[in-house]
Structures are given as structure tokens and as C-alpha cells.
Length: 328
Image (cartoon, rainbow, N blue to C red):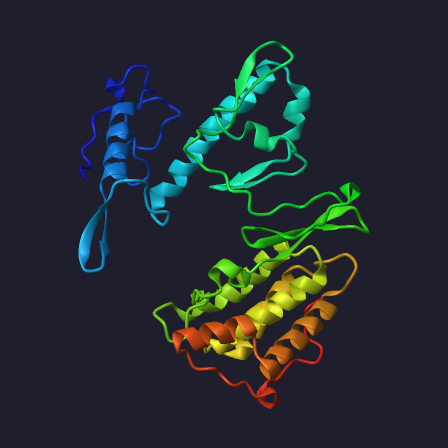
């Protein structure tokens, strides 16, 4: 693919690169500027030049693009956001406020759509679904008919009398709390999915991998931060911390160094949950770790058996837990 791009000033209505507010040199390491035609040409090349190695042969993929490539995520975001903008703009133009209110709590991450209190979403899912508004104008649905929306999970409000279930959304499991009349979330591990039950998923690299020790140990700290954002209740957060401590120790990392990373997170955020002190969170994480040491982790043990990884036996007698760590 060529990196020789024409001058942006040749494009009609383009921004003057010498303007005072355009201080970064164009087509440098900091920024790359393309005209519309150049961008479309590059996009066409990207969409039509996907090859893969399969069963000893080089295969040309003619439909779709791989999800793992850098550009595919942005392309999916741009395309879906364009259709969503057109749909919402039409609702605003026609002053369909009641219908617009249904979509105010909807969100999307790449190709995962999460809808809250939007009973008419299925009526406006596709372009072929047209509705006549009170203004007399006709509005079409959100997405092209070529994009299939699969309703995988749903939570039904308890006042309807229908059963409810947890919804997995990215790394969260969302459920309805009958007592508080609120939605709550806790960590969702994809290894729990029935669809992936036969897939040997490896979450953390082994200690003897090519990753630097500092980078690998920082995973412990970053996972604590992630778990705090996902888990609505402190009990779920503490169990998640104990679980990652066990799994990374099974991967060969030093227990003391992992524990130091976890306690550092607790010290930085001295009151994670309003109804409990960090020392109680720490103690439950310790209990969770010790339970895994005694009885194993079903998800991790299952992965190890499929991949042929050895089980690291942890003797609790050699684990030195600080009795009163500085976590508050």
C-alpha cells in the first residue's frame, strides 16, 4: 500500500495546513491527512485485500473483514454511528419526543447493543421497518437489513410477572435487584458461557513468557481497577480480586509481588465502598484465594486440562499473608 498522498490543499473546501490552529505537520509521524478520494481508495483496498492461511492454502476473504485488525473496529463504529445519527436526527426533526425518550438509555459498544426500557426497539431495528409518525412523516428503522440483530438475552421488569435473567454485556453481568428496584452488575467471565465451554481460553500470560515482569505484575493492579468499575457490590469485587490473585499465581508469578500490587490499589483508594472498610474487602479476597488453593478453580482447571498446562499446587503454609496490611 502506497504512503505517497497528495496535498490536502488540492481538495475542495479543505483546511489550510498552514493555518495557525494547525500546528502539527501534516503527513508526519504525528498525523496523516487524506483527501476524501484517497481515504475511499485506501478503504476499498482494505475491504478487498483480506487473505488468510487456512488448511495449507492462502484464501481470499471476499465477504467481511477480520474483527482483530486495527481498522475493523473503527470502521464498524463509524458505520453504525452514522445510521444511528440519521435515525435520532429524524426523531428530533419530527419532534417525536416520546419515541426519542425510549432510546435515551440505549448504548452500543462496537456491535453489542444494550437497551434499557426500550420496548419498541424491535420495531425500529431495520431500514425496511417504516413507521408513520404523528407529524405525518415516515421514518425508517436504524440499521440496514443486511445487519442481523440477534436478541440473546433480556431482563423483564418484575411487575409484568415474567421471569428475569442476567444479561452478559462485555465483561459485566447485569441483573435486576427486586429489593432496591435497581440494576446491578458484577464481573462476567466469558469462560462461563456455554458457547465457549469447549474453547481453551487463556487470560494471563505465563511468568516465563516474553512479557516484562513489571508489565505482567501491573496486570494485577489494572484488573483491580477494572473489577471496581464492574462490580456493584463489594463482595463480588473482593472475590474477583482473590480469583485473579490465584490465577496469576498459578501462572507462575510471585505471590508476594502480586499481593503487593493488590494492596497498593487498596491504599490508593482508601474507601472503595461506602458500606465497608477496605480491610474487610482484603479479608474476603484472602478467603477466596485460599478456597481456590484448597479446591481449585473450575474455570482455570478446565482450561489447564484442555491445554495440557500443569496445575501449580499452592501450599497455604508457605503463603505469608500480612495480618493487618496497610490497605485503609
